[in-house]
Length: 389
Image 1 (cartoon, one colour):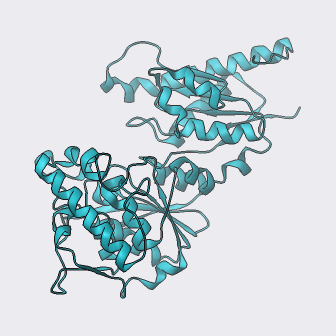
Image 2 (image 1 turned 90 degrees about the horizontal axis):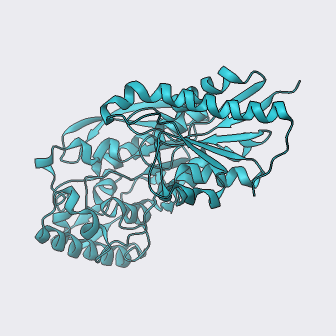
């Protein structure tokens, strides 16, 4: 008898299980009750936390650790990934310059820098990759990506031709941008940026106003940082010929989105689309009979660019049914139905405290997958040909 092939392609269950671990628990649950199945585990992500691990594990790649400068210049050990074919580097800027690397009292976007992110890109270039994927969530910075660019050879000069200090606070002194010493290897790679926000660089919806306060900016700092980023954008347009001021997404990660566009030729794309391409999801779904996806908490926002919605979109192109198994459900989870998820389930069996999730959550997930498997078995036994209305 030919086996039924099920693809399991979840996101990580944040703070609890990696995407691969979640897929493994789902697999165990299904195989506890279904005998004649084959499973394809495809760890997924949407550009945020867990993206490097998901792509590395999905492609049989490797992790690389390097020592770089943290947000305030202290040395930190940061990890990035290389895909199994050796052609693509996957970097999360938060590993080098994320907010989590600072104590609350240290947060100061006037001084924090993205230099370490540029160092990670430079290390990736030394490994002869042809493609660089950068996830830019969770930043501690508001420097417009100038720190990142410095690490790659770009010079930011004042009116006297001297380099200005790092950090968003010094950008008001910027007078010219010198690209003459930029790393020539950048011309040989394609840079893609996982970006799921559409904030422009400046203004009330820009980098400083929307995200500055959570990074430690006072109202006075917010105003100054916004003015400084506008100054940077003006000079980027004059000296490089790239207009990033109002481009959707340019304000992501304190302007790193715009900086990657201007200084590396980066292209901003929804994170889940980047991961779908990196793990070759459409190819790996071919020949499957069912797709199971999921995430730690599913709600109405899942329909807008989160991993389960992206997986469902690709599955529907192949006419495959999609089931989502999640840790818990938030407001309006029914909104995922129109984007291709045929049924969704919460694995939460009883109310538990957050600190209990790592201990109790995995087994709940396994048992939920068992119940999904039992429903599939019931349909098989009855020989019914049910269709969703």
